[in-house]
Amino acid sequence: MNTIAQTRVQEKTSLMTLLAVAIMGVGLITVAGHVQATTLHDAAHDVRHATGFPCH
Amino acid sequence: MMLHMTCAMQLAFPATNMFQKIVTSALIAGFGAGLLAAVLQFAFVQPVLLHAELFEGGDLVHFGSSVTLAQPDIAGDFDLVRNGLSIAFSALIYVGYALFLITTMIAAQERGHDLSVKAGLVWGVAGFGAVQMAPAFGLPPELPGMAAADVTDRQIWWFATVAATGIALWLIAFGKNWTMWGAAVILLAAPHIIGAPVPSTFTGPAPPELGAEFAARALGTGLVAWMTLGALTAYLWQSAPQEAS
Image 1: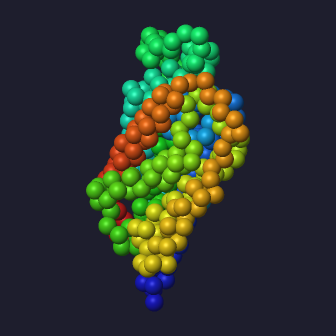
Image 2: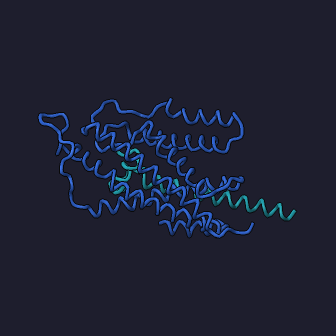
Image 3: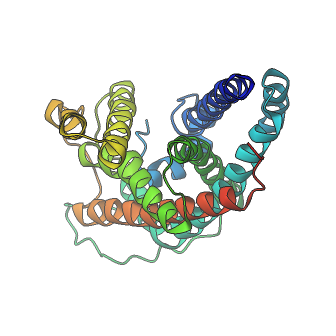
């Protein structure tokens, strides 16, 4: 019983952690690659083009 | 910024060690692949981009009174700020890729799928397929000055295509029956049957020769960087000391 309970807790935590990391990744891609604020756009311009992101 | 986020996440999530290991592996792999992508960009993609900017700015004219030379002397000064920012953003974007990639790798691993460095290469190819190849099929990498539809519409199509292709590739790799594989085919095809937003007119000032070269090189360097990212992420995650469970 105890083992099962522990496994469940660990799985849940692991899922939370994975979700958190995935959201960080998508957030980073969005900010660095897609947000159209002028400063960000100008700074990332060449990389956005070279990476094939939609740019301006 | 990343450091603050990491600290906040550590407070919020009890599985601190696990979180740290995942993020550290992704940071190193993403940074390494991002640097390689930047080097490849400077060597192969940037010269085409700078060449096209001469047409965008009107310094060179394609289809005019005079003949357009294919190889003008465009070796300018090395722009430290511009290229420094490119390196930084390349690293940031690949760290973003790595953070997402590693979560999918771990999710597969926890379902009993082996994760070797060789498998990491395949993960890298799949990541490239979802994040670069599939969107490029509808929105080819844009040379500066190219005509394009509204940027928000293209971004929505881009994210939707990446998501649909990513889920489809997961279903192809780990699906167990024809329903899943059939769903994968529909997800792969749907964005391209719906179609990417296209411009109403063509106004690109650069020659098509440059556009074709740019698209091919952007995709080629992307494939190399993604395969490196996949192999590095798998290697670093495998080498990280695992908790006894």
